Image (cartoon, rainbow, N blue to C red; front, top):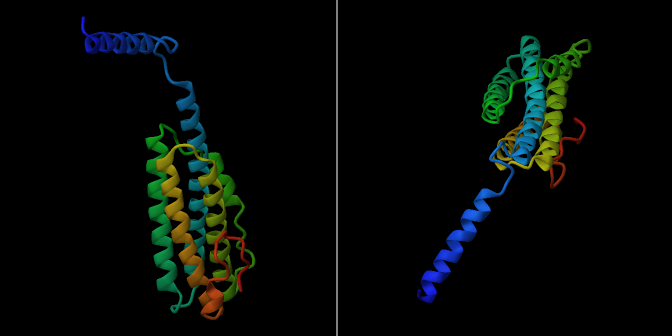
Length: 188
């Protein structure tokens, strides 16, 4: 045998030997664990986003005509976020946890909604909570494609915050208060 053939057979034998290792061909538990963790993170984002859509429904029922087009757009975009998060959960082999959704919805407090500013402040709080939560979950996810979904949602919510700051009376420069949006900047 020539040197190339011997090398080929050695590589082939080593490949076959390594293919036989690995615990009997069952489910890759590391990958399964990553998927389960990803489902939990994305499900948390789903519950938070569902509560935000509910908040927009309430805010829109109390809003003046001047803010309604912007708030309807935000609500529609947040509904699209819900759809994307649901697809991500299903793509990871999970299901929505109704207990998380119910908990986020119960946490909403509509008692103080008496004015335009109160309604905008609630929308602002929900969008800021979304940015903060999505960024936290992005940093913990080990599977890349749900990370990109959450990062994209956080980016869109940060845009909402800019316009909500403006609607709440912030001047043009104050609508973008920091070089990194974390969702923690208080409403103006």
